[in-house]
Image (tube, rainbow, N blue to C red):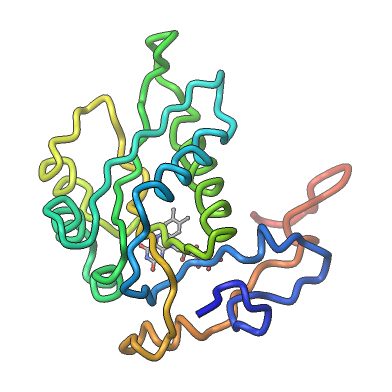
Length: 203
Ligand SMILES: Cc1cc2nc3c(=O)[nH]c(=O)nc-3n(C[C@H](O)[C@H](O)[C@H](O)COP(=O)(O)O)c2cc1C
């Protein structure tokens, strides 16, 4: 399956021109059996490391397992039920964590989760350029994963992330099949970008 096929329902038609680097990333649910190689995974982590971060703190920490190993299963067991059926075929499952404090200042870093989001997006866009797709999930049991993975309280879980090569939607059960073939939608830019002053509306 070619995830960047422009006739694929997940590759949108946009109102303004947007590069294929951005448009080819989407949140996949159907994963093929093909495993990501360790070399490619290192490539993706390196890409993540080139994300910007407050004071170049780079507060991201990734803890991951490969399909078939104990850590994959532990993370999978901490996902909420709606995320478990389709993630079982991912090549890699990871917990994306953020260091709560600035290493240099020893004080709370209010941008820690923001910066992990930037790193994840950078990783995912790079992955899409290699034909690999991911799916971030806030749907996991936070207390359970902290305990199961023995996470120190200096780190805060941001999301779990499933990564792999995409496969066809027809191997998914409902409701995931329908979600996998539904077009992606976005707000029009006029709804969130304003020149001069904010409109008199409730946000
Ligand atoms: C912080 C965050 C949490 C998310 N949590 C979940 C989740 O628990 N389960 C899920 O199926 N998708 C989850 N998603 C995926 C979003 O639903 C998805 O990104 C959004 O619908 C836009 O679709 P797209 O990524 O294909 O463009 C999450 C995404 C983000 C960024």
